[in-house]
Length: 131
Image (cartoon, rainbow, N blue to C red):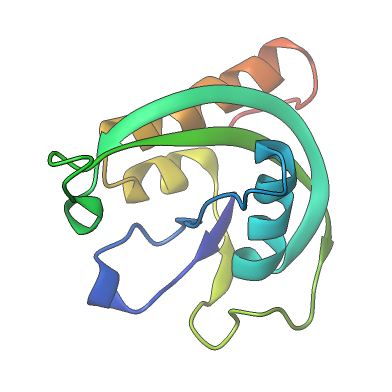
């Protein structure tokens, strides 16, 4: 699990990748782009983990007074760690075990996506252990 650290100003989890997809790209293309921009890693999308709904105070408006959002979560098999990336001035990377990453999750839906994703990889024989 790649950890990115962003300034505390946004009250994010330490390994969050935020953003969204542009009108001219698929959600999969957006996930790959966000991984490059925010974590500085390239890889292969392995599994779609699902859509997870959450509320965002910063995205409340007249169209969504409760700030309801939907995150598309993917497992990414990292194949390359870039020396420089667009948001490197705002983020610091480090590798975490699944339990360490789970402890960093600010919301239950994030922990659920992380743990379900790695459990599926383990069950499918794609990884030999979950540490």
